[in-house]
Image 1 (cartoon, rainbow, N blue to C red):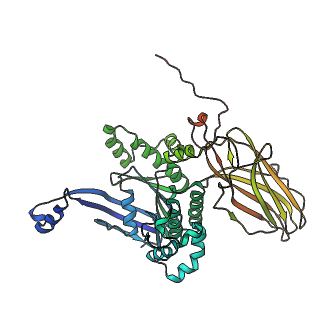
Image 2 (spheres, rainbow, N blue to C red; image 1 turned 180 degrees about the vertical axis):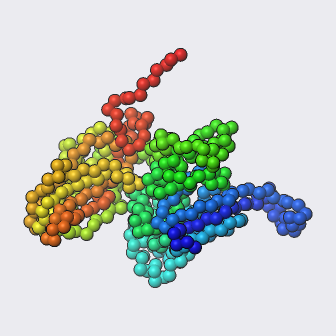
Image 3 (cartoon, one colour; image 1 turned 180 degrees about the horizontal axis):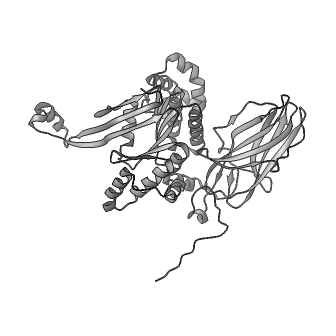
Length: 458
């Protein structure tokens, strides 16, 4: 296998035999194909070929029944192709049907060892990673209860924690990032981002176009079991949208145009689709919209918080307040908010700057701000000194879940500028939906007043 590629898929096809009645299987086995056929054939995949480079993230998109999950199961080895071959180099971890290998009668602890063993980890490896798995799942005392007593949320947490503990060379994900609450979804995205940074190759199936655009380097468009095109994520998503919403009589012509490369993607199509909230997200937002008022709820907290090593400073208590100074994590559009934290210096530091960043749940950096736009810095700080930092911003965010970073940059004894301290996903907040927002999509509301003009001409 070429060292350039982590995954090579060559002419893969998959055909299923469909029997109208159960006894037809027996009749077929007795008579053989030469005396007749008691089945019809369903072609799930046809001559699919593409390569995935090492460290590359490739999205796979297509409507239901296009062959996405079948392809991933073949890559995982849980299905055998009818023809063609797949070559994968390195350890593979799959997030397909989370928890499919769990025994409901076993406790969570027992299932960790059972499921990890199925994935190829030795008992010593599981023991070494056990605390990390349990910490990621965060299900408390339920770890020693039978899995059959778990809520769906606890089940998903434990299954995901076990699946990502393998430290894979190749990670295969099938819609697994759309499960759980918002905080846990961000935690999962953060782990996927970490795997990407460490050079893991990822194949990612999702119906969320925004996730495909944000996470992937390339995207594969499947339809009817055929590979129509491999393109930049935005282009592939746009072509998928055209195909998905095309009139039935025009679909085959569009398929052929995509396959031949004659149909070019319209960037506006991709933008529209990638910014459109999924039905599940919209439903979740509406179901959680209990008051529509800004407030603070302790249950809404970041589970993906990461603190970098301190190099002379410590960031303390990053949080949001409204203009009256009340702490909030449920925000409303159009209001003004203050992002605050304190910094305590543990070593002498000079030329100090402070910063913040707001990110989407998928980790997209939406807005950042530094303490000194003119490039000047704060004077020196001695050990034991403490300062308060405050950033003011106008909430133009549309309904959704967001996360903040906090950072402090400066020079210490060696004279090199570095992060004195940095906290990722330090604070989680949510912007709730109001009826006035329902005709807008994306992350931001950039219109101060309605900008759409409708004119009846006849």
